[in-house]
Structure formats: C-alpha cells, structure tokens
Length: 265
Image (cartoon, rainbow, N blue to C red; front, side):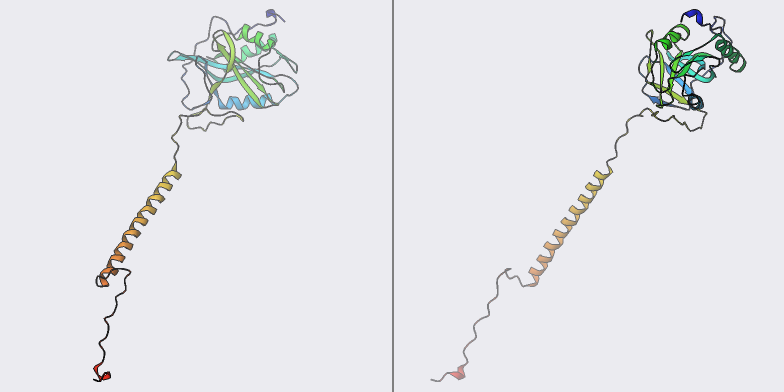
C-alpha cells in the first residue's frame, strides 16, 4: 500500500464558508480529560447510530467519516462532531479497511450536499472481536489523511462492546481518556453501555448516623441526670418526714415504770 492509493479532494486549501459554532451547553463529560488533550464533543444520537451501524457486519471492518467543525475557546482546541458519512465502496476484510477512490468521491459529494459548512473531523472504523487500538494500517491512514490537530480516530469493537477515541497530542496520535457527549437543551443524555460519567466535585459525606448516635447519647445523659436529681430529692423528703432521725438507726422506747400494786412492803 502506498499513498497514491488514496485521494481526498475535500481537504483542499479552499474551504467552504464556516458555520458559527458554540460549545454545546447540554453536555456530559465521560472519563477524565488529560491536560493538553483535544476537547472532543460528540452528539449522543451519533454515538448510538454508529454503534448500531457497527453491529450490522461482524465478519469484516466497517467505517464512516466524522463531520463537524472545530473552534478554540480560551486557548483550548475543541472539536464538535455533528454528523457522519458512511464509508461506502470501501475494500474491507476482517482485519483491515481500505478507502477506495469511489469512497472518497462519495464522501466528498455527501459533505457538499448534506453537511455544508462542515469539515471532516476524522474517521471511525470497527475491529470486530480484537479490541480497540490503531494498527499500522490505521496509523498510515491517520498520519497521511487525518493529521490535523482537531482530527480524530474512533474505534469500535462491536463484539466485545469496547470503544475508544484517539487524537493528536504533541505530534503523536494517542488515546483520548475523556470526551463530552452532548444533546439538545433539556434532553437527557444517554450514554453507551460501559461509558461512565466523570466524577463531579467530591461532596461532603453526610454522617447522619453519627449525629443520631450523639443525639441519643445526649437524651440518655439528660434522662439519667434528671433521674438522679429526682431520686436525691425523694430521699431528702423521706428524711424530713422521719423527724430528723438518723437514717439506718432504730428509735428505742423508754423503759416502763414498775406498777406499784405489784409490790408490798
């Protein structure tokens, strides 16, 4: 395979007028986005559609082209994937996918007809049953035809259910550890199986059980104190009713005087 096997007519220097893009407001972060990584935004419906498309043929690789645009916000490069074009007329086997001249021509016509003002942001292809990575063949395609800083690769293993994005970082193509999934305003974001939302800011744990134990302990101590006071007061009142005798001592009766009638002189 050599570079003459490929031709991309839509990556010319003369570009179509660009649309005005903004960062999606209704987006959920998946994974952790490392410093220096491309900030990738991709529509949730596109993810589900590509996932379904990837499962149609498990005997050979299939693919598509990702379209949208990029922008910079506060010095951070962002790519927004808003659509895809199926890679028709490609030569495919169980371990490779080769785009033909017919493939490039089809993608170019679809881009002009249905995605005016957008550009190619990368490509997606499947690895049925053998994991998520970029082979030497994949790297050749990425390095020669998707080598701009905002262009990515997306790999789906429809058998194992694994997926992964790859992007440019310091001149090398590397796995992206995180990305954003967006939807329409007010729409619930439905992630693909296995995708996990990035953890939010840590919340303080509510140790309610500790407060409950402390409350019950305070109630017990208050009841015990009140009981002690009442017991002491009761003992004091009993002592006063007894005439001031010492507690624990019996009062002895005075001896009776002998009856004088019982004695004679």
